[in-house]
Length: 128
Image (cartoon, rainbow, N blue to C red; front, side):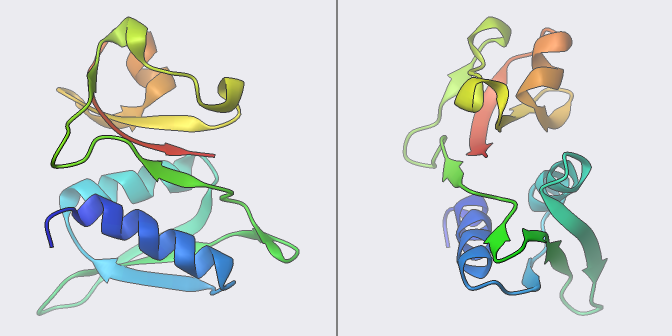
């Protein structure tokens, strides 16, 4: 598999549409930091990392009735076409209702945090 972040977003999207309570995915530090951002911003309920031989990330999804809190996920920068933005070029997703996730030199953070710290980087994905 070449694009593990895209796989993570696809698993979340599929589980969200199937109204599954928990999603399991293989562990990586990048995926764990994206999951922690999603939890901090209120898009998912809980993040747990477990497993001895192979670590797994378990995400507990949030729902409002029969509709998921996450309405959409979109991968922006792919392995075939990386997309880098400066601090002033970070887009606002749905006029500020969504968020952009950016990988900067100071770590993975939301677009708002990157703009405040005047940092640019690789534009990983949009969540709304």
